[in-house]
Length: 602
Image 1 (cartoon, rainbow, N blue to C red):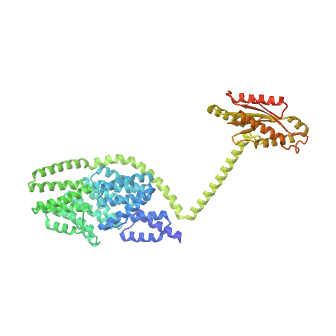
Image 2: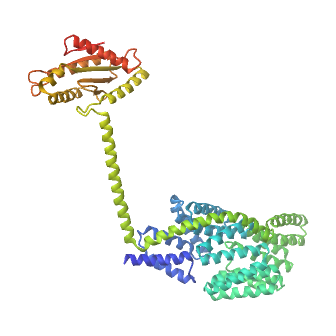
Image 3: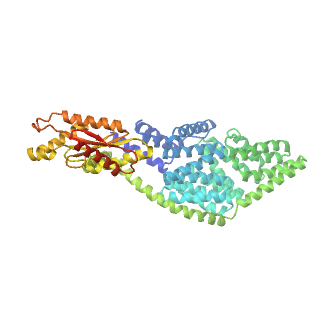
């Protein structure tokens, strides 16, 4: 049953991801089903569900808007430590959207920028497109058309390449809106009519009515107010039928604007008063225009003081959302109002502000062709990167889909990989042991297991350099077995080898950890004593000679106890190991001359 639940959950998550749903009721139903299907320990699917829950909060009342923003803020903070991750980036975009909706445009832009940067780090085309779409829509609303079109055109390219039709239509809607705001209303109307038709064909009725309202805006900007009212009325009736009083009130505000242009003041005033029951400062865009239209009515009714109060409310809301286009319209009305009140100085100051702002907007509102060409230059560079991202993402998604379709195969693959890793680890361990063994053999005398001549001399040279550098003592003992040739001749080389082994064992037990003892010839041995002065070296040498002489040799050479002769040399003015060894050999020669089984120091 678990795999069936997973299959169903993945299907629903994919539908939500693609936006292939028609109504809010369907979305609610699927989200509720997913909550039942996905177990708490399925972290990956739980995180996907969480992002969809964030985006699908209702925001038709102030209380719901506050809940939506609180949800986004809380959960984005929980995933902050995982950034960049797909879940955190999606929640960051959700948080930015609700901040923008709450009128905190500057904070929203900061979060949009951060989310887009994360999306590029993740190489996630869908998240990149989502971020660019949201940021582009906000920049367009603020009148910053060049960066807005750059974002929206790039997002359009990604959505089209990913075949995400719903999101491509949504982004096209924002592009058409930007063209309308730039003044190219003819192109905008063509886009919106095509979009409205497509939305209706896919039964996306909310989006279709939004396109219809954008057509109304475009007609209004062309000065065709009667045409605009036809489309506004269509939107008004739709939201009325859906009992969505907030959206109906927003449409009513826009209708009032066109009615005022047609000098139908009573109808406009009635719509605005109805809207006043549902629209607050939290809906900064419709609120600002509602107050602006109230000001116009009061001005036409020769009540400039009341008009000024509404202008103040509108100005605050326009500044809150940084709507410079609205501010230009407001400043014109404010100038007229102040003039009616004979406040000439203030009227002149406002008029100057209007001129400056208008000039600023004129710089932004360049022709469609110039803006699009400038934007397209940058977009073409970005599109190459986007195509590469999409190709990589497509491959990743194919791999993910394959693994999710057959979780049993996934476990088998993991087991095989683990087995391979174990085999490789064992092989590597064996190779390392073999390498270590070969190295040991290369440095060890095969018979006695002591250091061989090469290793012994190499370590002695290291100790010598250290002693010369730090002016520390260093001594060596050179010794060999007395009459060893007679042992080989009388008892054979096999006994001779055993004598050598026994000799190495006796001497090794007398060494310090830092000392090194090695066999450097047939019966010749060398002991290197770092940090040992003359007295200490002599004492160690005599202990070795005594221990060898007192050892039990009857089982090897019953008629001949074994002895050694030793020469000791300590570092004085020598600068090379050869000089020090020569002194030790001289001591060994003196010990032999003195009758053997003794120590001599040079």
